[in-house]
Length: 280
Image (cartoon, rainbow, N blue to C red; front, side):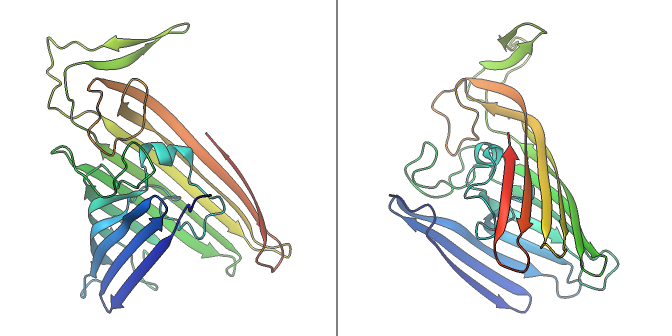
């Protein structure tokens, strides 16, 4: 037996100020999930600043609460590239109020440590917390537009996300994949012209997502999907984004892509639904 999630969340809202604290308690230990403050501009309420430990503003599924998601876990590429979903940083958001010309648009842009949060029992760490291990910070940005039409019977949304960051090279042994039509082999990069140690390894992601929901007599039908591609720096036997400084110092750089798609059918006006998910 195990406890997958044991969440306790406190939210305080007073006008233009919001504070959130959330912890996770399980048989593996207790860890911080969220701890942030949000301040909204009193003169231009479409602008806000959030500082602390929060969800990374990348893609749709990371922003979606675990209580609302139809499957127990997020997509595999999220677990590999953005483990535990959250990170420590600062974010600026633009989201016009209802009645404004750009209502439905939301733009988030933030600077983060890039290490994410460590959760007991996940990854290589047994401790919990947010641990920075190099001097580099990562940029994450997302733009999303959502609109409801046809007398509230059709809701659609589209979004795009970007991630630009990386981890410190611990030595000059940097490998990239040399591929031909028939072979694939790791190639050591030229260190005579470039000094890698101490510089930043590439960690660049680009993502796009969509959501469509249509209400009818048989119930609400929802289709949504997300695609991501980019470059990931890892180890020879591990592509996960590290939560702590890797013990193996050589760096292996890979190109990747991943995606998921949902089909969700609500059964009439009940609270029951059937969900199908495909991902790679």
